[in-house]
Image (cartoon, rainbow, N blue to C red; front, side, top):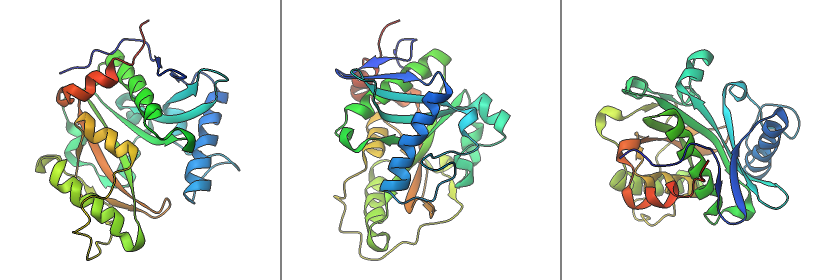
Length: 254
């Protein structure tokens, strides 16, 4: 089922709306939010100027921003790397973490999202829903068939939390074998995590799974961010009908 989102990348969730960055200042604002979340909150090793998370992919990406309607404060962002821009760049972000294999030869158009972050005051679901509405509009506008990207799992002590979440994903959301990817650095698998199948999934990962996305194999150990990354793949024809209606209808009309 192809989504029915409208053509303009805009949306509304009461006091929130979504837009594409239209200036260098917008992009810098997103990089500042990314630094706050990834650098200050998570303690990640980042590139870029002081107080900014910047890398060589940023100039090739579109940056999707969620703002408060009053005051325009930025509360969430992600970046979009399209197949045409990936060809110009010469790689995908995820290719540094996984041998992507057949993912790159899927029929139709593909895009990658990454560096998704949400301000700590807006992690109850609305910001992610509005962000997805913007992605839905972008996908519909440009006719993309697949979306993929890395979703991060907290490691927990000795990697136990990541393994507990993976146990759940292996049972509920694993892709078919031909769509599996190989991590370039595997996460050490601890013992004793099998019983903790109720480990909560992070919000972005939960949104992926609800939409019908699949986990394409075992996680990559991202030492810079101190997390385990899984590659998620969403075939737009496989959107979960009940959840897709919920997020697609949030896109605003032209």
